[in-house]
Length: 313
Image 1: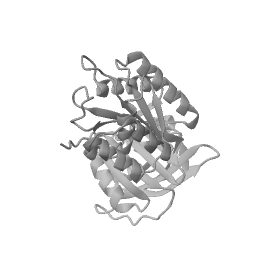
Image 2 (image 1 turned 135 degrees about the vertical axis):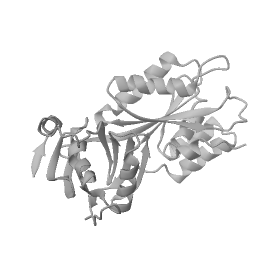
Image 3 (image 1 turned 90 degrees about the vertical axis):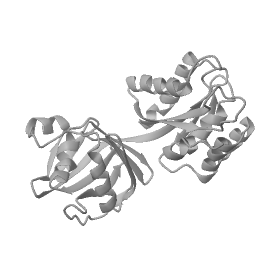
Image 4 (image 1 turned 30 degrees about the vertical axis):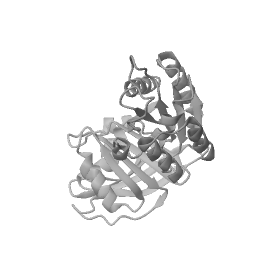
């Protein structure tokens, strides 16, 4: 086994058949781990995601969004039965080291997929070090343990930042995400959630937003407080509110049902507050309470963007 840091890999291997990943992020929640990887190719990761889903028993869900590939896995170790073209690559081990606050993911692959296992991933931002077990390349097996800092997931629902005269919630929320990114937070995604189109209180299109972040545990309160600060500075509304969801578990059925109701009918602030209280979800009035309705609804569909954008008349 050879242990190398990203700069070591870059110095040692500058071959034209190695394409460094942009970044790798891992978030942990009990026995679940979500791996977010920014692949060097815009759509090249589609092949990889398909192979990983077919090959790895540890993977619970996987998808591609542009060059971002996301794997939700369970912690454990499962041997892979690799076969060229059919099951060419996958994850065979996911381990959390709480003492060192790291996550190790062992990737294995044949030929080019094996090169990606450690050589390409290991050069990306966010990597602490890589354990190279088999270098790979040509027709050979490649196998490596990729070690990254352990982070956590935070989803922030946002609603009611505009007025009848000016503003746009989706853009303001995104600009908040970008400003937080520039301050060092990992801004992962922005999901637009279509709400009830016949709501008489709407400004126009009636949507709320879910922003997702990867954060270190000690930075969570700072992230939330900074989000509130930025919204207070920029919102045009006296009804702005946010909702906070922590962790990797799928939003509970009660939250999903609430979100679907908010897409199809009128919901009161009191109902939103009751659902949030029952599910221990933090609701915060930034400038007012009315935004709590849409902010909470955004959380129930943050992981289902196809449903989130549907319009129900």
